[in-house]
Length: 354
Ligand SMILES: Nc1ncnc2c1ncn2[C@@H]1O[C@H](COP(=O)(O)OP(=O)(O)OP(=O)(O)O)[C@@H](O)[C@H]1O
Ligand SMILES: [Mg+2]
Image (cartoon, rainbow, N blue to C red; front, side, top):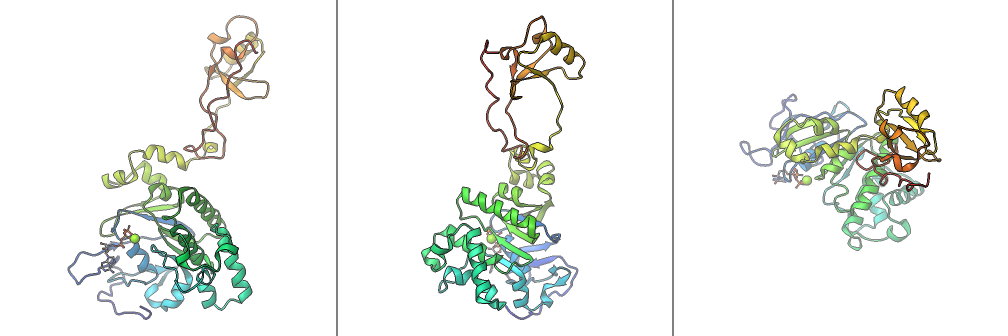
């Protein structure tokens, strides 16, 4: 696995194929052609056995393509010494694969040691990464893999892959064994890091929601490594290329799209604002001068109470909260449109209180 192996089909222009069996058998990954722009997260999703892990392993040459070429930064990976290649690529393998005879700290330090970092630098980096993945260094650094839960092992695997800060990361279901709350935190942490360091990441998951959250682009694979669609999450959710993709992303794809848009991106209309206690005649005049059919009633603190139409503003006297029709949920600008409702409308002050 270390040196270049002669390939049966040397045609460099053929898209990548990996066939585990002899010629004539169906390939695990056939004719897959995919470019991941530098600094982006490409998420591979698809049913079990469709060839995701095989695709990953062709990138760092843990499996050699039967035909075709894999290039990183324009360089054919088959032309690079395998050891150099793997130092440049952080790999979180699907089965975690911690070295059982090494402690957590030693596992994380594997690549820094290959790169001959000083013991101090290595130790600092290990502590930093264990913190990052939520494992208290004091409690975990000297444990062995057998003394960890599945999710803890997985987090050590992520720390190990990040250790030498490689420009390319291959992450095969890196958070699959972690509970939803911690997974959410790890995802956020990873995205925060990514915003700073802009690695080129190939990320495998079974979870469509995780794909939508993490991906700049999603590659949906069908059995045999056939590329069903390769586009941004927004494009895949709004325009699935086939029935297979449509089924894969789920019937709630409209709802899922909401998780891609921030509330602050919604176009806002500036309504006529009416305060509790204001004269009806004044409010009516302002509403008549505006293109909107409704005015928004707010309390003394400017908090929305509900909507007022011309009918509610007819007559004399002042306006109180009981005249308004309660509005919908209140949203904050930061969260996504899917996650945003922060509670029901502000409870209107009871009749007579205004
Ligand atoms: N070493 C191997 N020898 C023979 N066949 C293999 C080998 N590794 C994988 N395969 C086959 O290749 C196909 C793709 O496997 P791969 O591991 O890439 O799938 P995957 O998409 O990662 O699946 P999962 O989601 O279950 O991890 C499968 O049919 C699998 O049985
Ligand atoms: Mg796999």
